[in-house]
Amino acid sequence: MKRILAIEDDPGLRGLYEAIAEKIKCSIDTAATGEAGLALIEGNRYDMIFLDLRLPGYDGVEILQIIGRKFPETPVYVVTGFYEEYFERLRELNRQGIFFELLRKPFRNAEIVEIIQSVLGESS
Amino acid sequence: MDYQFTLYIAGRTPNAKAAVAAVRDLLEKSGLHNRHVLNVVDVVRNPEEAEANCVFATPTIAKIAPEPCRKVVGDLRDMRMVFLKLGVKREDLESSFRQDGL
Image (cartoon, rainbow over all chains, first blue to last red; front, side):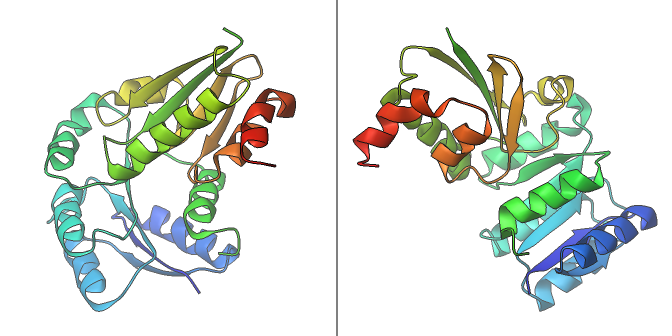
């Protein structure tokens, strides 16, 4: 079974990720903070990661730097509003050779399903 | 031009460069080679263009013209399938299929 990690401080969205993963038969772990997410990443192998950009403590950019260096093969979707103010630090990561994909926030259930099935395959 | 496409990517990553190259390769080898316009939007550099065009994730390829506008999101590895999903007529892709012996 494919494994997903969602690092998201909004409990409603964490519940949404869990419900979607259950529906499409994926295993999912969720973390409410960057620190908790890092602990999960260190101890597990994930097939894809959803990462909220704005988190308490370590924020999404800092987490992304760590994932990019330690697990560069793991697909990471940065979840954020598509507004200029959020993107300067992401551009800097690109310049450092840290890569990711983007998912617009807010999102719809069907959009998350489409992304997961695209990355992990229809059988996920 | 008969067809207009926009490809949305997240930075000039190896995956994004491969997607751009694959799209261009298919278009050049197909019956669309002199009948299309391809725009590439780097969403990391221009997020608001993606927002304005209701693009919710990268990578996405959109067929802007002819109408209806259609989008394929995520896995762009099977480029022929992507273009068929976009609603490109099979006969317009024929040259590409023929060159590959299909």
